[in-house]
Every structure is written in C-alpha cells, then in structure tokens.
Length: 407
Image (cartoon, rainbow, N blue to C red; front, side, top):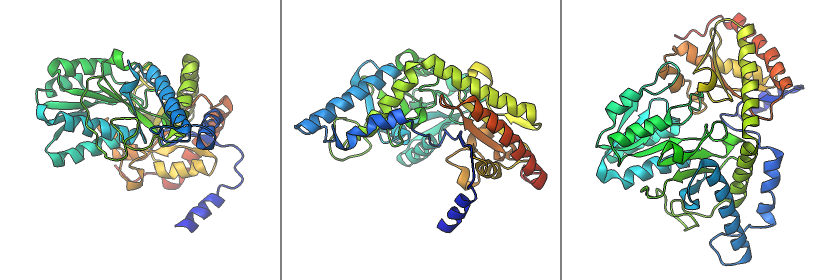
C-alpha cells in the first residue's frame, strides 16, 4: 500500500501550479494562524490551565481570552456558554448524546433532517441502543427542509432536534430561525441543536437571534488548525457529559485543554470576521466564476443545491454526467487541482452521498459529482487555471469511459 502511494506521488512530479479546493475535508492553515500558535507550544502558556503557577495561569488566561473572542463571533451571551472539543465531530456527539441523556425523562424522540452530517447520523443510530428513536425530515431538490413536515413531526415526546445551518455538501442555507420557532411552539422542552460549522465565517450567524439551544462550530472550516471545535450551549440548557477524565476548566469536556489549537481557532476566527463582507464577497465572486466557467465550457453538468443567496458563498457542488467522480479527482490531482468527490465521509465506501440521493440525484449523477470550496486566499489566476484543467479532464475521461455504468 505504501509503495502504491509513493508511485502515485511520483506521478505528480512536475506540477507547476497547485489549487487546493478540497476545503470541505481539510484546509491549508494560513501563516498568520501558524505564527499565532507557535509560542504556545514552548514559550508561554504551555502549562495546565487548572494548576496554580505562572504557566498554568497564563494558559487559563489565554484559553478564556480565546473563548471570549469566539463567543462574540457566534453571539453567545456569556463566556461559559462555549465548550472546546477536539473537533466538530466531538461537539456534535456532545450536543446530541449529552442533551438526549440529560432530557430522556421528557421524551426519547430525536428529529433530524435526512441530509445531516455523517457524525450526526451515526450518533442517532447509536442512541437507538439506549431506547431513542429517530425521525428524519425530508428535503426538496435543493436541500431545504420541509418545515410543514417538521411541524407535523415534533411532539411532546421529542427531546432533541438537530438541523445544520448550512449543509456541508450542498451549501444550502437552512431556515434555522423558522425551524427553531416551530420546534419551540410544538414543544418548549425540546432541545434545538444546529451544526453551524459551514455557516460560521460564511454567513451572518448569531445564536441568540436564531434562538437555538446548542450550536457547533469548527476551526478547520474557517482555515484554522484541525483538532479543535466548540459547542455553544445556551445558559440553562441541560447537557450531560459523555466522557469522564481529568477535570479541566470546562464542565462538559474533561482533559487538559489544547492551548495552541484554541489560540489558532481564535486567530482564524479573527481573520475571517475582521473583513467579513470583503471575505464573503471574494469567496462568492470566485465561486461564481468557477461555476459559470464550467457550465460555459461543458454540457451534461448539473449544479447540486440552490443558486444565489440561498447558498453558502464558498460552495460549488457539480455533477458531471458520463464521468466518474473518483477518476476525475485523480485526473485533476495529477494536474495540481485538488477537489473531493461526493461526501468526504463516505467516498471510500464507494457509496453515493446520502445528501445527493436525498435531493433526488440518480446514482450515476451522485457518483459523478465533485465538491469544491473557495477561500479568501484563492486568486483569479487559480480559477483560470482550474477552468483550463477541469474541462479537459472531464472530456478526456468521457472519451475513455463513455459512461459510469451506474444508474
């Protein structure tokens, strides 16, 4: 296996221009964020924040200062409403399991949309072992949840509702405020959670305005370091710990806090929000040029998800008929363009994305999809290069294969 990978890497020799668009799965951390983190590994605040000595106090102050910054960006009322976790996955696990267990006496029905992230889907499957049931709300062909179905579904037995603010694959911006209002009208005791990882830094986000109880945000989704996320928990909402261990500064997550990554998360947030409108407009402009250029050059292509302001500004998810997505990602990679096919969490299982299936795409269309996300660091030259490479790659693969052979 290692030798095969070495051969694949050798095949990439000679690439002169690289464009990384796989920002759904991992990101390049900007130098400003790396520089902000480095001192906290060995120069200052390297102590345990619960201990009574200078390095410990420095760590405590640094963590609280970082939490205060991120809390402000999400609209939290008080600092204690934010809990750092190792990633978005752990934050979603804490949100769903923690609130389900804490409120199990009020009901054991969990409601989610059918296009929630894989980690949410898997948590609800796990909770079935503890007597919980799950109802999935359908979506339309653009990925928007059926609010009428939500109204019909939520009842007095509903304990937790989880709907992502922005779908990670389609970029669909969900009507979270309306959904939360429906849930609270139907059952004031139900806990409303939203995975806001793909909304944070891309669309205006204020958890108090949205009236959500819990919200997940992620560092790497805003070009911060991997390995750190956070869960907003509205004051007064009951959430149980799901892990036990060494007591840290946070009541909901045990263990020693990772100060350097928390600093990186805060710095990445500052960079995303200090010129928010400029950053968002840049992502949207480059994304639109990318999509428009592809559609101008190629036939038999479909945009997955909504258009315009109903879609996150960075997201481009496109299906290419008669072209297998995995083959296309490899072909593009050999030319220095890096994208992902289908869902990051399911692509190695050779199964179509559950999100694309939910919006009505055929298997052939789902298997022929690629996902690209722009950032404020991309350039016009990058997009021009992609529009030179991608159409040629699609045409070449169509000429070789002719059809995916899947329907």
